[in-house]
Amino acid sequence: MQSLAAGLLSLVFLALFLGIWHLATLPKKEVAGANDEYAKLMGKGSKKSEGFPTLAQLGEAAVTQLKNPFYDRGANDKGIGIQLGWSLARVAAGYGLAILVAVPLGFLIGMSPILSRALNPFIQILKPISPLAWMPLALYTIKDSSISGVFVIFICSIWPMLINTAFGVASVRREWLNVARTLEVSPLRKAFAVILPAAAPTILTGMRISIGIAWLVIVAAEMLVGGTGIGYFVWNEWNNLNLTNVIFAILVIGVVGMILDFLIGRLQSAVSYVE
Image (cartoon, rainbow, N blue to C red):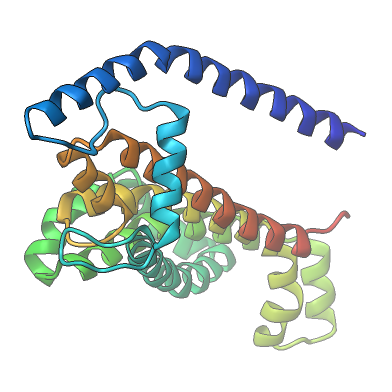
């Protein structure tokens, strides 16, 4: 019952938002029409948006982009599907590398108080650094914009996973560890049979935070390095003064981010338990 009420309330908010958008853009639609007629008379017809787009203009742009999302007409003219694919590939590569480093290292930190205290100053110094601050150093050393983007995703994804993994491992109930010790369970089996299931919800929480940060950062990184990606698509459309496509891309970014969060959230629910 609460889910139904929440869904209906969300629809009300959406309708209210769209209504305000429609009313706010009504006068500008007339101005845009007048500007288009003037441009045609001057022999300079243009499809670019004039001012904030209407809902109809945004819908038309969405249909145009989604009708053929994988076209490739050169460096600065690729479909939204290709650009989105490049961004997702970079996020997957950087995020996957972060998992491979953060989860095992987090296990070691969580199981060793001495190692935790030794590495904590380095973690606290590196964690607050903006991922984009690493971009100039990455471009200088790696000398490849695409791989530099992957490195930025790696460096921004590693900290939430590392910290949450270490916390989850360190927070495993002592009773369970004592039972494993009494049964003389090997360290490797204890890690996979006792510690990992107990710490899994906390580890997935870190992974869920990391995927949100990674998707946020890749858009900004692609605006800086250019070439391909949804971030570059937004910047390129802004340079073309096509505000309608910019807003459409922003909606795509939000929807993809929501889907990524949903997928990790479902995985987190699957490994969660009630004591």
